[in-house]
Structure formats: C-alpha cells, structure tokens
Length: 90
Image 1 (cartoon, helix red, strand yellow):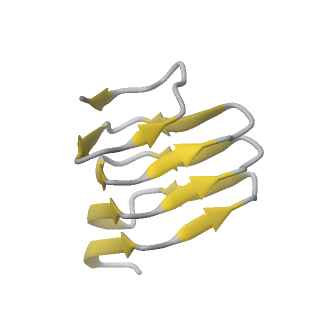
Image 2: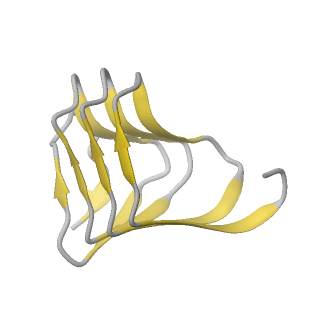
C-alpha cells in the first residue's frame, strides 16, 4: 500500500492476534467504520498515525483498546476499551 491516500475499513470483525490492527504510516487518511475489534492479546489498535473511528467497538483486549501516537477522532457511537495512552478526541 506504499502510496495510498485513503483506506476504509468498514463492516469488519477483527478478532485475536497480538495487536488487532496496526497503522504504521502507510496511508494518509484511515477511516474505521461500523467495525468490531476484539479479543486481541495486547491492543485492539496500535497506530503511529492519526485516524478516524466511527460507530465501532474496540474491547476485550488483553492490555487496552488503543495505543495512538498520532491521535484519533471519534465519530458516532464508539465503545473503546480505555487505556493509558487514550489520546482520542471525544
């Protein structure tokens, strides 16, 4: 995905794994919408870049829901397992 500009993750169920979803600088704009990320050993989302999460759930993970270095924006109704690096705008 070297020079993609937008990534839409919509209607997905991501279960298990160490980190459920890793966002490591490959896209300029990422939108996670109507999705469920659960039962990951460490974190549901590990993101170096900012992203938007809308009407989604990140829960039941081993450590915490999200670790965000670039921040994120929440839209709609999101259920996010809290964590020490929860830098999202509410």
